[in-house]
Image 1 (tube, helix red, strand yellow):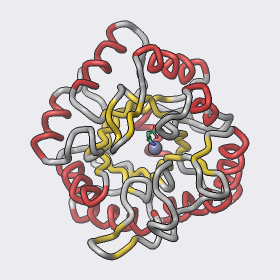
Image 2: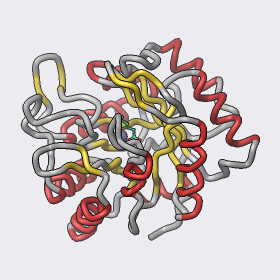
Image 3: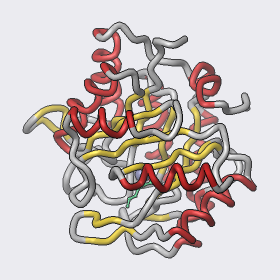
Length: 274
Ligand code: KMH
Ligand code: ZN
């Protein structure tokens, strides 16, 4: 199973809006449908945010429950990963509303950073609180790393016993304010992991597919989807996250790596079967 690649679909996020691409889902049923479509194209993990009907970001438990119910009602067995990042400016307790029954993973953002023109706040006490909540709920953390110093935070969490196996690492490259998405950066990050770990890379905007290609080559896993990027190629809006997943799947096959099924992804990520 070493050659398997876990494809994660980030189908909505908190920032992108329908004015930018009409395929951005807002309603729980739309987000569930986007996740199922991405799964049909090969996504083993779905990274979920929620929205209010007018598109504002929501971390309301009832929205997440409805999304997860919709995904399962469609017979989709993708790994459910809920965002605890929410949107910039959201109080931490509100962000934690996403960790409802049915979630299998939750994100653990590894530090405060500029996020475009905003500041995405994740103080060390915040990180400890999210890590503790994930542990209490038996969820596998996905550590979101946007910059090299955040690997030192990861090491500190492990050393201090705040983070245990199993955990997963996600390198998010190209956020304005975080680390860029070149090969040198990704190699540096992978070499800087405190211990061997499964990792995924996500490139923001036009970096999405180049970072996917790099991750495939360097032995990592891949995240794509409208949360990170709205275009299939320059000037061509993606018709949905499914189309970006299909593209990533084609790239994986060309690189000699088969997409993992959700069951295989659970095995690799240390998640108990549902
Ligand atoms: N919306 C970003 C500020 C996560 O999902 O945990 C944070 C984010 C990370 O999307
Ligand atoms: Zn997210």
